[in-house]
Image (cartoon, rainbow over all chains, first blue to last red; front, side, top):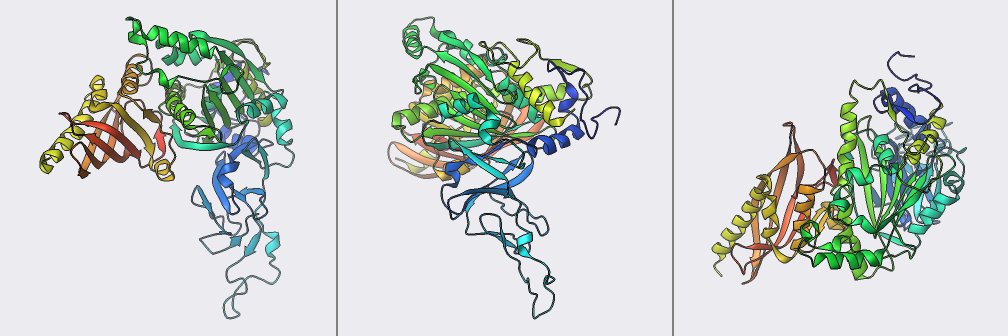
Length: 414
Length: 157
């Protein structure tokens, strides 16, 4: 064990068995980062791969990553979804270079080895040699060299993958409440309205914690307060699954009262801090339950967001100790009319890299990361709302962050 | 209308636009647009796929004003500026009232501590109203070559 860093087997030491003192070195230690790739992303977890609609037809594929590990997701001729490492069994070359496409088979550009859409090795160039010379030895058998399949599971149009056979099935992994939270938002066929990637100058965990942090929302993000928008929102609760890793938080809004309030206020002369064009927040209660914000996380890397009528999946891709790529996939639904689509596009200004209530999250992780440089020998204080990781009927709490560390510690085995 | 005069007016509009942003006179930025305007920052990938969502979208001058107000008074971020360099401008035809133009640009981001980086490259696809002087944008599509945005985007492009 090195004195300054993580134990190569057990990771960064914690000051206690609790969840409320989080060592800063977890964000700065390269050994810890390596452990996370092995034990979390390639561990008994489920990671978001793509939307089922992105691979609707036979031959469609998406190339993505679980953590940093490159994987391919395909739809085969039987309509089944497959996933396997994006790495040729021969010399380890990347098989699919583009993010998305449609192919009959997967062919490695390096030496022409080919695979079918289930990952089965079907062709080895010059397998029998050229003019009876060279070629593979007679005992070489292609069927011993298929791409190792990942487990895949689909839930409400979201496709997940896992490297591990001993991971619980997806719905048991998530627990009934989180499954319910996903099905609530994705309750009808969705399509993609747009996508972008935000490159964050920080460790992936800082962003994932941020999405579970219901404490910072009204403090760091001043847009709603400044424009006096959220006066009629009602605090909701936090639901955390038994493992701690997944959660969703909700807040409600009296949509009709807000609409009336904003129109009335807009007529007054003291309206300098009111929006010139409030269409950016004009919302409808599309789920009929008054919930205006639901932020849901799936450990270790997915967020499903409903903020008013903007629906998005965010996917966390670690890209080194101090770099994270965050994919934003903005969604609409099959039953949206033109007005609804326009409403979603306008509210799209609220979120993403340029989002009125999210752009601060792009820089705050980087600020933390900078502050921790060679100053990481203490622990952060995560005690808001108590010490454990239970569901709570209020949001001024860090319970969901503690839940993240509960699951994280169980997997790392510190 | 005099073709050369239109070209000159379009050039002046585009030059004044980036000057306004880079010199931090953002309060004037909405005035480069007509009242019923369309401003969208998207990526080449989304644009070519016909996906309508943009990272910034305004469907009225009021929405542009709100962007500036939010940036000045609500949003929190590390201070920075851009320097835009706009390449040759193509005016692709116009009638008496509307011209279409496109141009390439890069925007360098200069952080408050002096750190500089290439923040964005892309194309401006413009529809320009010629009925008032100076000219104004009816529509400005900012099509970024990359779908990746470093950290955050708060100052308009």
